[in-house]
Image (cartoon, rainbow, N blue to C red; front, side, top):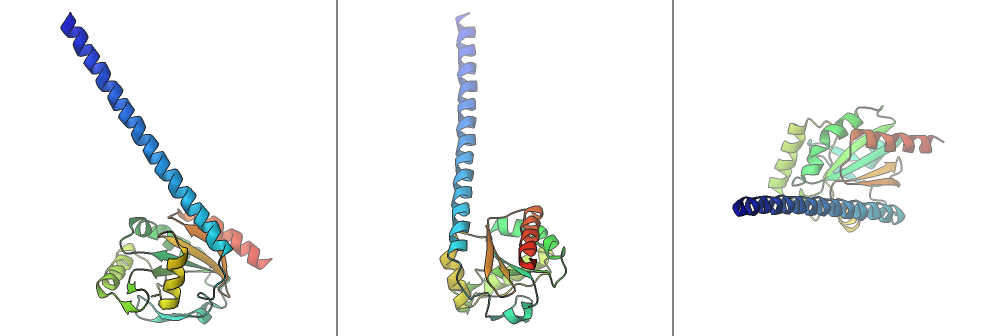
Length: 204
């Protein structure tokens, strides 16, 4: 009888321990998510408040696809989104299907999506060959068709000084003025909501 009580007590303790550990795990994840969201949310407001820059207004840069792209080429586009990503950033790569769908949802005169692989250069000065090759592979494997520009020193310095991490997406008007910043990976529906709202604003 005593042995049965001891076994039951041990089982009860074991269940209680598992429950306590599970609760601690859930609380830890919640705290991480809250901190992540708070940090990124504050950074969005910070960037938007301090977004006086001409890096998206004047540039002519090479693309991953082997061509070149200049800001003036987008002067007739109402809204441009610059998605900053990294080759070692799983959330960046995971959202490419949503971004690709977004890029095909509008006429080119309304919206263009441009990728910026931030880690393919050393501070925007020297190309890192292995990272460049990896970026090209990722783009190909992800089925991405929108252009990706290789940042120069000016663009690289600005982005590194402002963002908390990748992915971060800058929405600008046709003159390169930053209108909205989205930090962290999002679903297509969220990006579309942001784009639609900005298109309404610029057309007013």
